[in-house]
Amino acid sequence: MKLSVMQENLARGLSVVSRAVSNRSTLPVLANVLLKTEDAGLKLTATNLEIGITYWVPGKIESDGATTVPAKLLTDLVNSLPAGDRVDLELQAGDTLHLRCGRFETHVKGIDADEFPAIGVAGERPTTRIAQNVLRRALAETAFAAASDEARPILTGVLARFEGDQLTLAAADNYRIAVKTIPILDAVPETSVVIPARALNELARVLADVDDPVEVVLAGGRNQVLFHLDGIDLVSRLIDGQFPNYQQIVPQSHSTRAVLDREELLRAVRPAALIAHESANIVKLQIGAEGEPGITVSASAEVGDHVGQVEAAVEGDGTTIAFNARYLADVLTNVTAEQFALELNGPLSPGVFKPVGDDHYIHVVMPVRTTS
Image 1 (cartoon, rainbow, N blue to C red):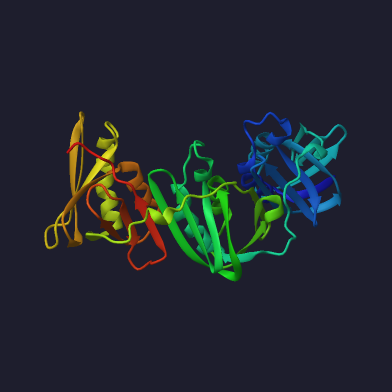
Image 2: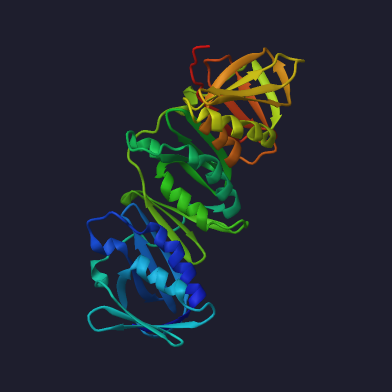
């Protein structure tokens, strides 16, 4: 293997694929990145056996070949080289990679490419396509609500339900639910899969804010999903199991509805959360009855207390409800609507957040029981 690439292109590719490198595997090769000449360029691949990311770096090939080298070491080395310079790569005896850039020269010992696990590749007919900016925003508004612990593995994933010309994404842990429906470009028969939230977070990092589509390939036989965009493939295993019926938990009616400015409520929640952090992380929202002043946000702990006021247009009964401060901050940070409608059914029923003017998103937060 002998080729030349530009430093900035190689650095960009390594920064993308290194997100999939395994840090805790007993297989040494999983800490490496696979370098392989392909399609008049250098193909970089990394995997942790759950997620695999492939990135094509344009280059000038003199001879073909493949090897694997430690991903972190190679990434740090390339980042230390002068931007805008050419990097010459050559595979020498004993799977040693020789790098030359200007007056710098490095040898890195690798592991034979045959030891690197095979991951899914593009080439199958896409199941559907989705505009990158649409999918990117939908992932930002849902994936954060997935569970982070492995107690219930199914909840560490995001349900993706394809139905006709729509895709519904749903994420939930034991305390909240986020649901978003978006259009897809090619209609498909109804099918549902559960994709690890970590894989979707990595996908969101490489999606651009453009209308160009990302291709989605559901490889049912291999229990995988593959996302393909220009120069990048991301393949993920699917999670086996039955995703909970979240629709049973979403309230269908309300006795109180408050329309408020998202950023104003977030500004009120943040200082309250600092006080709440010193106790049980509880923030209370007191909603005035129809015609009364808006919402009072408060928190109390041994270290002190905090009260903030938020303007809101209230319909229905006044009520008080307590939430975990982090869950409140999460939805207000990740969903960028200008205004929210907060719908409630008293202090013990879930609170429902709906962006005003967007009927395709809903976020449910479970209340916290308090003694007062």
